[in-house]
Length: 145
Image (cartoon, rainbow, N blue to C red; front, side, top):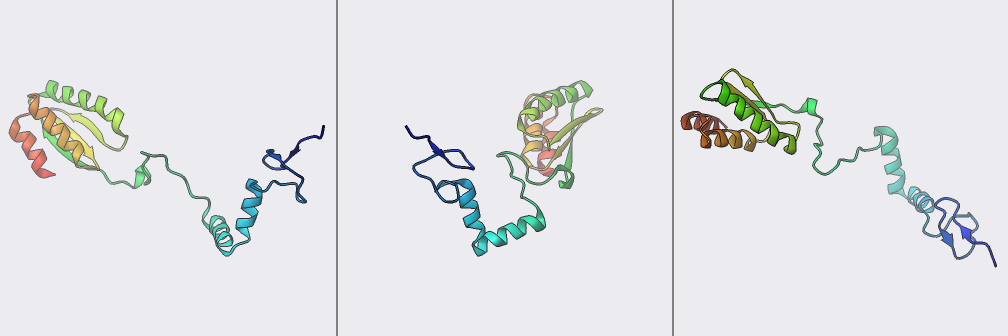
């Protein structure tokens, strides 16, 4: 029985030996073949000059947080207790959404930090519907967007 011939790089089983010890579909052989083309040489030069590109995960922001400007909207609630309720409910919803948008309490006001205008609109609409803010205060936030 003959021993199996394996690729020197990726260790898959080859049908027969090759002069370089690499299989026909080996990653290393494909990479070396790519680097011998003009596009491959340009890509390698760009990686040397600029570094390897970072790959984003789906849902991940491509812009770093420190470069994002966050606008703010103020929603006036009926009192501090209602403002605390709005903030606690919105924070629970915000944990599931993202880390860019913010919400905090400032006395009877709720300060909503946003990049996407739908976030303060949703908060103001919810607070107005559930009686935590007057309809005119919620409408003022919506109209200010």
